[in-house]
Length: 150
Ligand SMILES: [Cu+2]
Image (cartoon, rainbow, N blue to C red):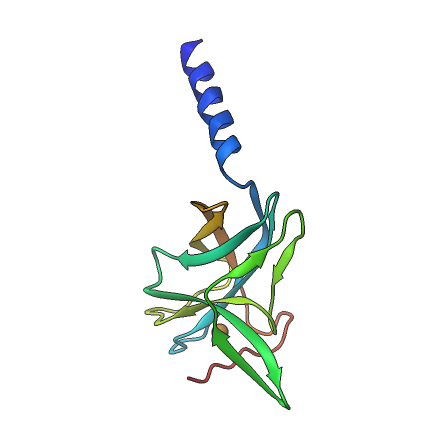
């Protein structure tokens, strides 16, 4: 009896301090041999005002938060410091908008494989991490091509 009570107490106190963040539809664009970059996409909903301030992956050496925007006729992307997660509003990371850039890939990401990502969320001056797994989908399944120009 003691152990379940302790776990319940810890869980309750964690909820009191941290934003409750729900990540759904997480996926990564699968790559072909020799391709060094890819993108990860997902929906993030926080129950309190928060920001996505960082993403890391044990499997990938360089991960950045990017925003893609039309600049005249040209789609450009740039690194951004954070993505706002307004209270209760789902924020979509999707091709053509916000995305997680996976860089310096050492091996291809194969469709069906799952890529571990750790999101760092900041709310009320506190940081928490959220571990997710994004499923790789084959190129060409939805969305627009994701070129990368640095
Ligand atoms: Cu990018």
